[in-house]
Figure (cartoon, rainbow, N blue to C red):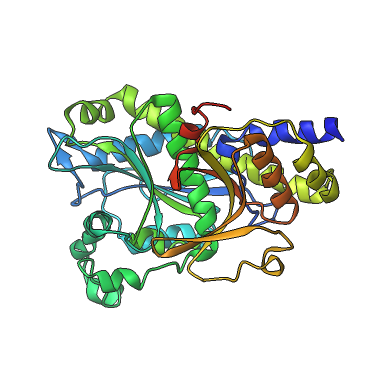
Length: 373
């Protein structure tokens, strides 16, 4: 039992923050299709600061990502644009949907009237505060550059919070997968490139709303920041950002393949894992609580075990407009890893470990730097 369980954990632990993913499309004859979207273009230059142009930088990064992904086996890369042209937001989403894509990744650069800096990756959702609303509004305002935008976007107003509510979680089926990929991207930026982590966030981006697959919008940094703008405008910066985004996408794809194999060739008995949870060697962190996030939903669900495939001790917390459902509550990291595996055995293949310090959610990487009891 120990050898078998350890081998499985070695495989699982190779993935950042213990993240795994649901297989949404299990057609092994079909290549893994990734649509890469370079933000803005043509008449829409996006953010322009100190001579740095968002549309040019985002395109350079996307082309580098695509070149790397095209070398991966069984991968097909589709671009929404490969040159300096204007592409409607709706058309960008249509390209991904018509291709029956497995993933949509949109690359952008941020700006602010301060020296703010850092990376953030967005998934679809209601703006949680005014700042998030302003970011979504700014990206969506490109709609006004399009002909017949009133008809094309059916009365959608980028300046209206009410219109953004209309976008909320039409893509809910893919929300967990989008969050998982976004987390991989942010972790790579933070751990490999030492960029400031501005976290995974949610807002009502039209280009994410209309794509029917896991989708993320990556803000690679602030052109308005003197140092970060110069970095993003450099060949070195663009290459490094592209490499880390590529690595996140490849990890995501490979974990899908691993999940498929796991379901086709199960090797671990649920009862063995449940017993191992109570007998594993302890590794407890001071003032830290680990939980397994099973799902995020706009629906409020009773936490009784029958609603969660027999799992007990389910905790529900409302965060913004979403309810988060957690399994387990322990300061023992070894135990929570086993509990995550148990949850996967029960069918929660998208579950992942989260950390809290004195009731406040913190980055897992930060929690693991804490003092061990």
